[in-house]
Image (cartoon, one colour):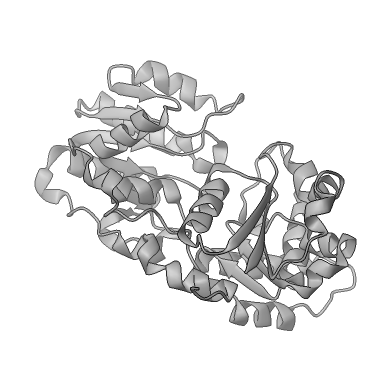
Length: 358
C-alpha cells in the first residue's frame, strides 16, 4: 500500500503524529510531504502551489491513500493533480480554525476556516483527535455559514459529516518501551511543570497569577517552565521569570534529554489553556508520573476524571494547587495512561487506512 502523507503546517504535535504513525505502521510504503510551521496565512492558502512547484514529480505518482492534515487545501490540490482524487482521501484534524480563540490584534481567519471546510467536504473520511474537536468544528462551521449572504442550507450536510466522522486521538508512546523502562524516576511532589507553547491562547496569565499568589502565601514549590518559545511572547513571562526566580529550576525550551528528565521529576503538570483539542504535552507528562491538573472545559472533561480537573477559574486552580502542595493526602493517584498509548490505537489506524499486515 502506498500512502501520501501531507502536512501543510508541521507544528511539533503534527510532526510527532506523522513520525510515530509511520513508525508504528512500518509495513506501509509512506511518502511524506511537509511544510515548515511559519507564515501561517500563506501556508494554509498556498500549500497546493508550494507543493506543485517543488514536488510536482512526487505528486504525479499514483497512491492508494492520500492522508492530509486539515491545513492542507485538499480540494485545490486535487484540482491541480486530478489523479489524486482516485485515491482514498482522508483528512486528519489536529485542530480546527472555528474554535481557535482570536487575539485582539488578529484579523479573523476566514481563509483558514474555508480551507478547513472545503478540505473536510473533499475527503472520503474525516478524522478528529477528540470529540470536542469534531463538535466544535461542526458547530463553528454552522455558525460561520449563517453569515453567508445566501443563507445556504448547510445544516444537513454538516450534520451528516458529524455522523460519519471518526475520532482517533494522537496516541502517545508505549510506556512499556525499553527507553522508558530504564528511566530512573525521581518525582518531586512540589515540582510544577508548564510545558506548553508560550502564546496567549495557552492562557499563561492565569497560571502565573496563581503561582504569584502561592508564592506570596509562602507555599513551597519548584517551577519548570518549558515548551515552545517564540520571538514574541506574552509579557507575563518576563514578569514571572523575575517574581518567581526563587522557585525556578528550568526556564525555556530544553534539549530532549533534559526535557524528559524534567518530566520524569515533575510532581504536577498544569494547563490553564483557552485552546486545546487533545493536549499531548499534558498527556506525556501524566504518562511519566506527573499529576495533571486541567480546566473543566474544551477536550479535558472527556479525557480526565474529575480528580484531575479544576473549575477553570484562578480561584479553583489556586485551591487545588494549594491542597496538592501542602497536603499530600489530597493528591490523587498517578493517572493510568494506557488507554492513550499506541497499542490501544494501532489497529484502528490500520483499519482507517484500509491496510492489512503482509
